[in-house]
Length: 132
Image (cartoon, rainbow, N blue to C red; front, side, top):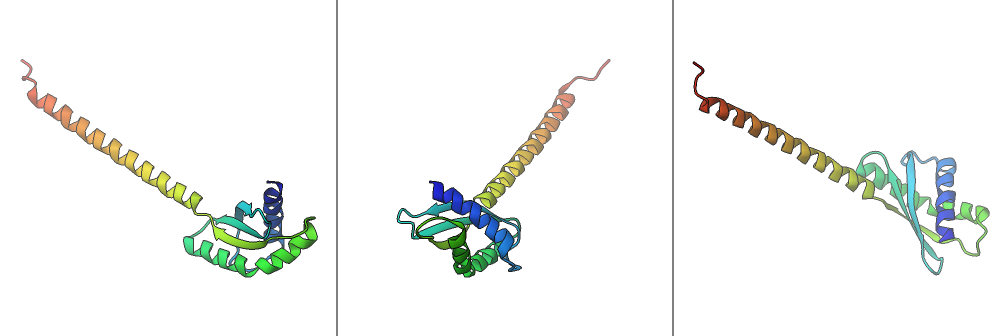
């Protein structure tokens, strides 16, 4: 939907340029879903840092939602600017966690395989008759 992408672009700029709250660091607006009646919008954000920092940023953005909405009225040419509801996008964090688990499993598998190969080499060496 065109309004979703326009709202995402405008919010990204407004958050970057207009908000000075220290809890809002560098963040990314990852998704915007506007309800069919255009009364509400769910905005997902992601941020580098800890989960607590992301939660604080979401809290700050929800506190600034009214101001952001007012600024959007001047920037967007639509009949009704939706009420903004910010949420944390945990998908990137979850993907990073799963990626770490996969890397760890691969490393453990390689270490186990190398240890098994070393044991097999020692057994073969023990079974060989002495050279005459």
